[in-house]
Image (cartoon, rainbow, N blue to C red):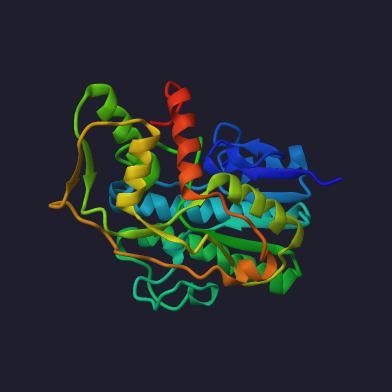
Length: 301
């Protein structure tokens, strides 16, 4: 009988996965080999889904470069090595789209991960994530292990980090709009609203992870995305509608837009799962807003 251990079990991806032993930083400091060995010895998993890491917004990435590199290198190295030592049958390791080179030809594909330097704003985190992919490939080649890595694009959903400063686009905008409605103020959005992004709902990631755990065996990572771009302006409209916000939306065009688009190619995923039905951005945001409103007191804000 399979026994799955999920690191980062209380995070966005971890909470969306329905079954498994979910651990977080309170259970073990994954930077510490002794603690990692102890948690693996305690649970003796046959499968591991590794989503844990030290993460943060732009400011944190700029101010704590050494910490972000050290923490994530140690976390990934220890978890992957523990999987080898404890004879784990299958490891699924979560990377991030930040692993891709800054100067890269779009759309993003699995073969472009190591073709250049990542963006300077978060290069320590990006390189640490890349090294997890390198370690997995090396372990596959030396030890013949069935370990794989996945690259999701802009996951959102319940149990996300809704911090306005450190959250990702959708959760931080939901929180902003919620407060604007509550305080009867303008809903301020950085930039023009024109940039395009690909979002994928956390429950879709959970379904895809379950499939990968049982079926995906390639040495190359697999991109998990819808490959459907939507504008930030449209996302803002959906959030305002879901929260029944009737006030003024103000796009702060004096603030930076960031990268205009970062399209990915999900053809590898669809070659395996041509009939997979993704949750629409409309339904996903509606569900996420509902969860946030109902769980505001316990949400990460």
